[in-house]
Length: 160
Image (cartoon, rainbow, N blue to C red; front, side, top):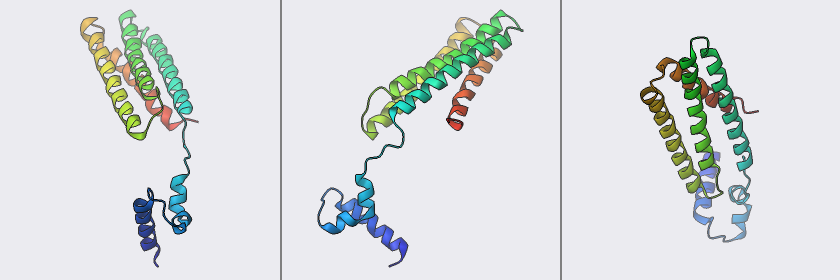
């Protein structure tokens, strides 16, 4: 039997027989044995630690952006720090929503999507408040926002 045909037959057996548990031949199937093992590749604790690390790095970038823009003026420094802090606040809100409770895959996906939606509402709303209510310089605010979001993207690249 060719390897591809065997693989298709094994997957079909796994899909059809997984809930029925009939016969000893089912227990010998490697795919069924692999499906019965419940290994978690990443725990919630490691996700929480990574989220905390990202938030702290974003707050450090907010402080650094504020110090760099302090050379241009007080308003620019506040705008850069506020833009970066807005991203850190959005990331904190998303991580609280995402890592709040243990549940199934559907619940995890729903929490991820609502967390991302809340994050972007906070970021866009914060940027609107910074630019239109307080009338702070837009270049500094967007630069701080981009610097803090770059930390978010780079943290997943270098998680170790």
